[in-house]
Image 1: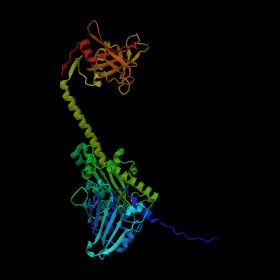
Image 2 (image 1 turned 180 degrees about the vertical axis):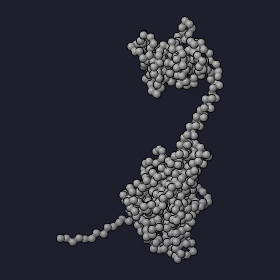
Image 3 (image 1 turned 120 degrees about the horizontal axis):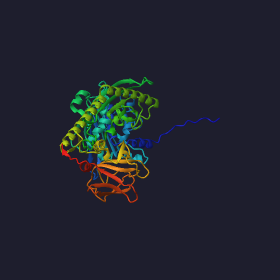
Image 4 (image 1 turned 90 degrees about the vertical axis):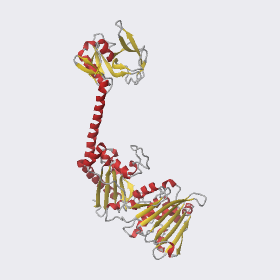
Amino acid sequence: MSEYISIVPKVIQENEFLEIASDFGDPLEVIREAISNAYDANATQLIINILMDSSQGYQNLIIEFHDNGEGMSYERLINNFWNLGDSYSKDFHDKIGEKGHGTKIYLRADFIDVLTNNGDCVYHSICDGPFKALRKRKLHEPKVCQVENGAIPKGTKIKLEGYSKEYSRYKQDIIKDYIYWFTKHGSIEGEFPENGKKDFKIFLKALDVDDMEELEFGHRFAPENSNINELFGQYETNAAEYFVKKYVWKNEKLEKFPHIKYDVVINVEGDTAKREYNTMLSSRKMNKTGKYKVSDRYGLWLCKDYIPIQRVNDWVTNFGTGSNSVVMLHGFINCQDFNLTANRGTIANTNIDVIENMKAEIETILDFINEDLYKKELFTLKQWQSEAKTMKIEQIEFNRRKSTLGNRKLVNINGIKILEPSSESETFMVFNTLYNFYPSKFEFEPLDYNTSIGIDILARNKTDAKISDCEFWYVELKYVLSANDFNHSFKNLRWIVCWDFGKDIKDGTEIKSNVDSQERVFRIIKTKENKNLYYLENDNSSIRIKILRLKEFIESDLDMKFMYL
């Protein structure tokens, strides 16, 4: 029997370095990495300076990071900063770095310059064209030397040249927004005072500003504002837009994995409350063009190290009163047992059973929030708003209708004062009153009235003589008969009752059905008594559609006069 020979697997280093460096998509992720490194180095401040150098005759983006942390020893610089998969932080539970991948994002630069002081020694390390070399499947070649101690205060300074060509991403407001949403400095850890590093500060200057701006630690939430009585008293029908209530759970344990803990912070925020602290939001109401919409950013985020990693709005199934309710949530779930992909883009490396258990528990938390808001909070406020809005609309309509009364005429029909109609429904009311008092004046008997579908009235002939072979016909109601607004077919139609004619109606006018495109011609016929009869005719049909003009009918046939109210 042959003897087994040991195989030593090898890694093609340049391929692995290139893949990891290429895996970071957003050019601002380099800022996230620098902030995480500064926190892991126990720094209290980080200076981020971004500028454009054109001294070489072309535009060259320069990004500088300078922290006052503990600096790097020679071994850490060689083994942890430049090596792949060799993280110093992985041995400390309170450190962010764990895979040894993060600093490889710097390899995307044209030139890397590192100066670090650990309190004992100062080291200078450079690397020229790392990404260019890796794309040629050659390993980059960083260099290091020890320099005089006075070269830099304790801490680390990194300078990246030619890191990106996406210059528009390196504006002050865009970077600030990114820092407060997707880095350690904007983490939700500040919501738990026993954990928060509130003494850390960032000083930022991007391409479009001249001065450094100080950024204090902690994610930005809208301040709580959940007293519904005060909100309604101040804002009435807009009160829910200002509603904010925070829910916090600390050191919760998964039911099926009791050794796994998680923390939850969820702000329920109205739309206006969001926009008052988040200037990046676009708004149609406020005619404001922002960098993103509420739906692009809000909802539920899964976090590790209290840094948002992955949004999971699909976990929100029964919250609120509509499909858009999820963006009322400004929520984060942090779990240190989430296993991230190499670029920290998702939690896809986490045990699927852990994820499913976490999802189930978050659904329970959302059910609690939902019930709480229904009982005494936001949804009560929304109900009040709806009622107040209805009352407001009704009052506006009441005032409008009252103000128009002075311009409207009325007629006295057997002691009943009937206003000149202003709509189809009022036209029906006038017609109904006239028919009840003067049924003999009409050639048809109205039997069924329905405006929800089809033509308005089903009527029956009063005479024994049947028109064609049918006893029942339609009667269409119009407030004003117009040549361009006939939304029914002429089939089965025998009468049209309207209040008046539009200005576009005269003898010979063609009226086309919007339903079947059939045409009829409007005709006026004078009687011996010098009264007008109105019809719609078609040469291909023996049936004339009679038109009853109620305004003229009242004045001529009934000899009644209108007067102003």
